[in-house]
Image 1 (cartoon, protein in one colour):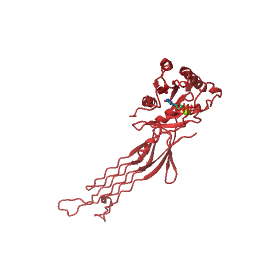
Image 2 (cartoon, rainbow, N blue to C red):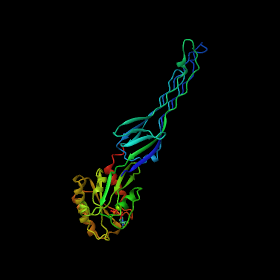
Image 3 (cartoon, rainbow, N blue to C red):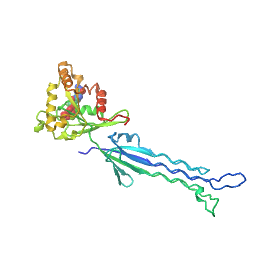
Image 4 (cartoon, rainbow, N blue to C red):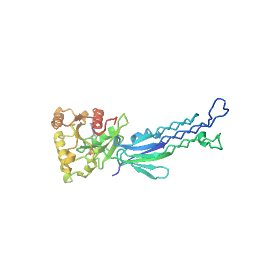
Length: 336
Ligand SMILES: Nc1nc2c(ncn2[C@@H]2O[C@H](COP(=O)(O)OP(=O)(O)OP(=O)(O)O)[C@@H](O)[C@H]2O)c(=O)[nH]1
Ligand SMILES: [Mg+2]
């Protein structure tokens, strides 16, 4: 299954500055030599691959990226300053196409990889450049050349940063629908989710991460019970698992037992998966009045040294705190 994130952006390199026409003013000389300086070069636009972003979401708010223009030349042979170049940071894994002809321009595979995507325009020459022994008072001067401008299509294959695991009906799909734009099917019966859903979670500072909602696990899943465990490969490369446990009365289930069962199934897929960083979440708190169901799960999490949260996707309780706890564990610091 391929989840694609896409964005279209416009990159504009800076125009070159115009060449200047000027003549020296000298005492007693009616017309001095030509002194018009050249225009500065326009800035370039580079694409740079970064590990500090993992979606293209921010480009829907910010589709235009322009480098600085070159300043015009001036008298006294003053060359205009060059325009400032800019770098557009894209997640590692982004493939960049030129919209005009569909050409694949670059595949950003390595962190720090840099690609010159739009070249700044050359500055025009000032009239001082046109002087020769037989042409001592040239008036020719050139305009700056325009900077390159391209419409780009960006494509990124999404990989999940966080995997939601738990029993069927634990509230995984409901949670992803609360924290992202994903709208998976939600229903009051087990195995509602048959295929993984990915959702992009956005933070107020425009950072984002990807959460995978997968089918529920039951006892014996590694032997094929329920939907089996093959779909766990979709969360194999995540950095964090969020383990949802239904603590409501209506479930009639034993939260600690559900937790242990899911852990056993994870371990039978791979030890690595079972030992990934994990957050334990007690779900459906709005429908849980019995502290006798909640406390043992909280204690178990504490015993194992796992962070523990209580949420209700119905009332919204605990959702924001959980979201930030996930972000903290999968995102690099904002400044990096
Ligand atoms: N009261 C209450 N009900 C909830 C809450 N979260 C989910 N539910 C309900 O629990 C049921 C199961 O929710 P889902 O989100 O489909 O559960 P799931 O874990 O995705 O289930 P599977 O896809 O079958 O593995 C639905 O009827 C939800 O409306 C909650 O916070 N409080
Ligand atoms: Mg589901």
